[in-house]
Length: 429
Ligand SMILES: *[C@@H]1O[C@H](CO)[C@@H](O)[C@H](O)[C@H]1NC(C)=O
Ligand SMILES: *[C@@H]1O[C@H](CO)[C@@H](O)[C@H](O)[C@H]1NC(C)=O
Ligand SMILES: *[C@@H]1O[C@H](CO)[C@@H](O)[C@H](O)[C@H]1NC(C)=O
Image (tube, rainbow, N blue to C red; front, side, top):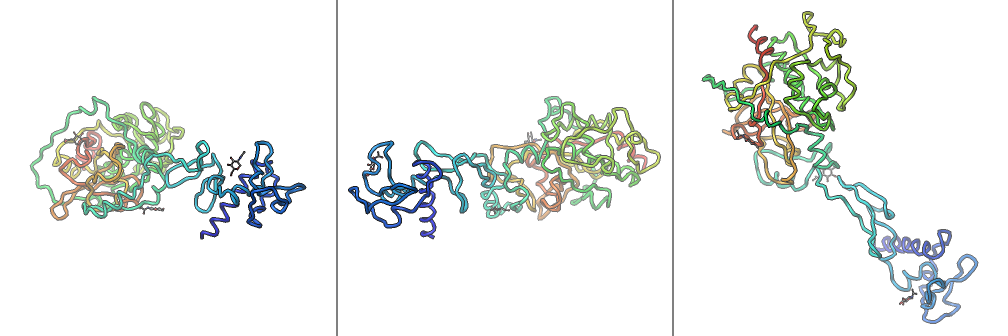
């Protein structure tokens, strides 16, 4: 090992000097390295043939600038200047020249050299999305949930994850102040309730939003889908398209850089959505193919029931406050939307009941819209069952459980239900 390193260093050192000596055509040697002989005085025996002249391995060979007739490997062999002359940065088994870049985990690193200093990598300092510290500490701490290393997140930056895996823009002041609906129903609340079991086959699948901050569109579209199926008693079991929002709800929205949920709900109320088959999700903003005043027929979509021509619309959204009101609404009408604050540790969630750990980065955070489908209890620990939008390979088959009744990560701070249209459909049942 030491031997190979030495050869490599000598090789790169020689190359460095050749460039300094007289251009790239000079054979790098070895010369002084052949005999290992370095002399004090000028002697013929202390020289070597190089091209059609001589080069020297004595201490006079460098006597003046411009009269340098030293052999290319003189500094390494006779002066031991090995480190100084390595012409690049090492990564793996390869050397890279000044200015070249490599990717190390999520960091872009550039090979630099300070004035006469050694070559070194200079990397950006952004925290990566996946963190050893989080994985290690959550495993040891016994928090009630487990963390894992997701390969799909490896090599990504935390700041990009917070944009492209989330996508909820802060609520406007008026929206944040919206009053809560008080239901306060004194009914028996079961300890467990799971929409997926209660309304078998009515609950829409977990979406993978991809590398696009479209949670606002995905959560709204999937909740409307679930509620159409539930309130029509299965007659209108549709999977609605988040793409209708991502591509057509442009005003005040920022596409894959995030959206406002209140704006999305108003769009769904006024214009409606079409189904996924008609306008499949593409994880990017595309041209909107839907006419402003069109319907499912002019959009060339195929309604699941013949009576329907208008797009799938909802009534005005309402805000739920208390834990039992959220439970009542889910039990009555189906999944609801919640907004939570996401920090780095959440990306590592594998299973269990999530509570923020404070391991990893605690400065960067983002807002995430999700779909709450039910609740339960495990050894007296209460939780919500929530659909995420990062595909089914994340968490518990695409879902996660989070502590209930303690506003964990703000999950109970802004919960949205949709009334009118869907409620009427439910009452007709
Ligand atoms: C020549 O080499 C000697 C090393 O012993 C060094 O002290 C001196 O600065 C060098 N001169 C030039 C002109 O590079
Ligand atoms: C996570 O996975 C990547 C490759 O998929 C690996 O290079 C990295 O070392 C892993 N990190 C941890 C903390 O296990
Ligand atoms: C819930 O937590 C969020 C932040 O995490 C906070 O802004 C909000 O005021 C809390 N809501 C309640 C009802 O405690």
